[in-house]
Image (cartoon, rainbow, N blue to C red; front, side):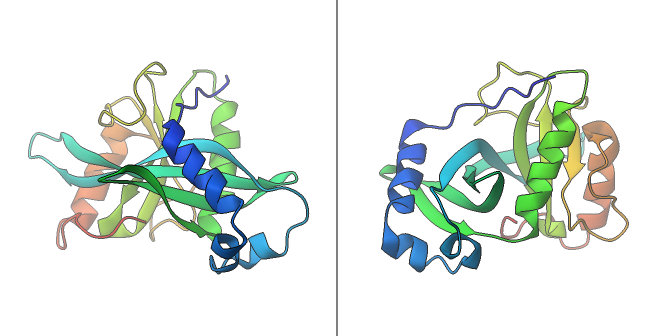
Length: 194
């Protein structure tokens, strides 16, 4: 089934396009993969990045939108990502980056496209475990910037995943969230997003 990628706010996309067209922004990004590419770099697959701040005693997750992440494609694969953030003046470019989460995100999205049910892809960061998951939301018509993981939504841990949690194995939120909550309990879930 095709994924229903939520539309990113137009100012977020414009800020990434502006950064991509700025030689200074690209050069100062410290992303060798972007500096060594040939051909145009294009932002694709905007995914809202939600942060799991805590889980209530009733098992309800409290998440907040932290930004929008765009995969930067050059040729046939993503070479980096661009992150945007909400400021007092609206959506703004934050930074470019590279690393294992780029290829892991692409892999998880390809995996999700083969599932029989349609989903809306999002990213869910679990800072207390330094973990990032592809969050497959069942309500494809929902606003990607809002909401909380439903019990029947899927979470696909991205590589590298914390020890004992298999990367790229889909889990229902109702099954994985208690495990994450228990593992992060001693330090809490608060921290910087992955």
